[in-house]
Length: 203
Image 1 (cartoon, rainbow, N blue to C red):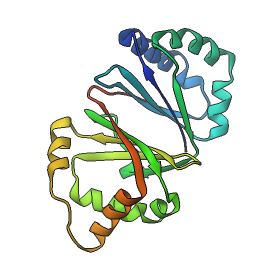
Image 2 (cartoon, rainbow, N blue to C red):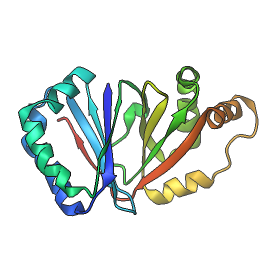
Image 3 (cartoon, rainbow, N blue to C red):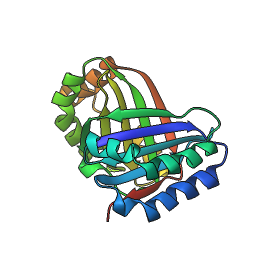
Image 4 (tube, helix red, strand yellow):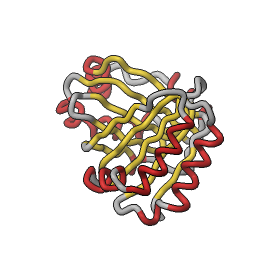
């Protein structure tokens, strides 16, 4: 899987959502390799879109197409300034990646000093969260070559997510080691809360 993340401050949220929904209706079925997307706005008006493709090659083919260029030329007018793009060829799935029925999504971004360690421990971390956080219905973890990561976590709802955050995690044993490794090797972490996310998936 390949993930492309785009984000930027938006001056017209209704128009941007309409443009994305129109793309899904008109283009999604015609774009080879498109798998779906998760979209939403933060409280400060930042738009975040996490779009999934089968491969980088198919994502780039779409980006370079005339139809996509024309769509983007109009769509970018909805933003207050430049839009940031992140491309990640290494993607790991938690609990099958998420659910379009999620009512709350948190996008976590930062840098990791030791991506190989994170990959080695990912399955154990996945199992831990399945046991300890039933409010999480799935996630994708997208890793870029420089260690930048974007984790997109889907929750049943925001109330359950906040209750899960306040829950005491293990204080000893392997579970604690996993959490400490994550905290030790990640930095510059930011949290983007999408209170009203919407989704698109390949039929």
